[in-house]
Length: 569
Image 1 (tube, helix red, strand yellow):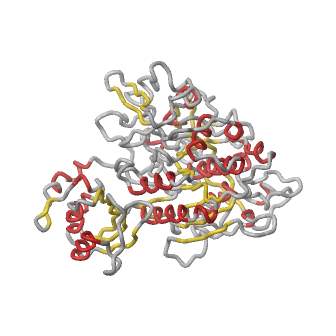
Image 2 (cartoon, helix red, strand yellow):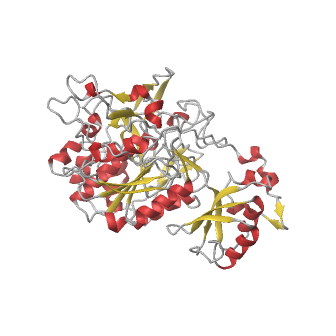
Image 3 (cartoon, helix red, strand yellow):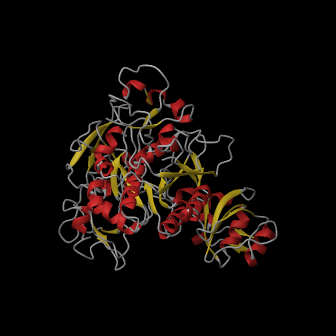
């Protein structure tokens, strides 16, 4: 996800939150259990106007007075002067602008369950298709035909590779949630993602072509739901609104897959986070939701970003193809974020897929094209003897690029069998993923020259490397939930074990047993994930604070890793 300038979480005690526990406004104490940790420090400025998302225990209703909330809450907000910007139907929440005193009073309303900042969210193929065995599906006539994929990103430029055989655009719906005069994609990220999802490679399919630059589902239909601005930034409320629209358009455009190649840090449990809750609601509507893991893996473990912490969603980490067609030399990208998720300790990512230095569609004149001109792919790359003319392709790296590979795979599976549930699709993708990895590998950042060591544990590669052929051949059915399990840490033995419940399929049958899904190299003994010197202790590979220790889970670094447009060796 490009330009992840995501600041490290700090212990709340350092921010003086204990003082805020005594904050009173109009004679009321704040119910701090209902206020997010990153919002609490802002309450010290009584004149601040703060954009928040307020969640309720029942669906909010609009009222006649200026579009504010109905019933008792409407009266309270109206009296306080708070402005409601958006009323959501996907989750029980509204986005609004309020003052600290209004936040305190809202926290004491019985129908308010949680108040959080409307947080900032950032944008988090020639070799790629072969790496995941997509050509096998194409040869069987599976190209994603008839499947609608909602792309929640920066927009989609009308590239010729996104047309059908009759020259008509396969972008069947467009809606921008960003205030901008630009009609399509002024950032360039969404166009690149769309090409990995559904580019047909027509601009590179000429006699003697050196590289056929086709996406994973090259005939799928796309819904362009634009939430990222020209700098690749957005907010929770815009992404939630886009998710809500994708669900509402499900039947009209056969929306079966949502691609979310963006994210931000985790501040609380997924059960409280409104962005995560919106992803969960979209999943429960029957849509496959595929989310990027994040690009902060060099910081250490527990660096998965929201909404990749959704236990239902398919969270994707990033592999490197080493720019070869064979799969055996592929390795994990050192920047690919690792689990378990902060707070909930959910096992993530679910699978990994190619995402390093991926060639896909170029949006000419976009921010990314201007920021990384060296990443514009010349025509000579795919057209023999061509050394001039406009380029149509671009190269980017990150889990943002790996995510549409898995989303495209889900579209192929749905074309093959439209009756598949999203639970079965997730389970088959994980069960069929390749689990043959080295114990560790090294990677060097070409910019800094720093070398990183990566271990292939369950929190780094999840259930394994995407294998579309295996997923398509699987006949297994998930009769329960494919919700990703959490882990339990034993401080005495310094080991962790998987936790499952009766509603989950993992471990409940021979088909979905732990060893089948995650492989015997990461699950052994009494369901123990691994030993004591990989995730914690003094042997932690990058020297950060340990995941399970008393210090901050995020390590000792500053800003989170930024990798897209760079790649690594």
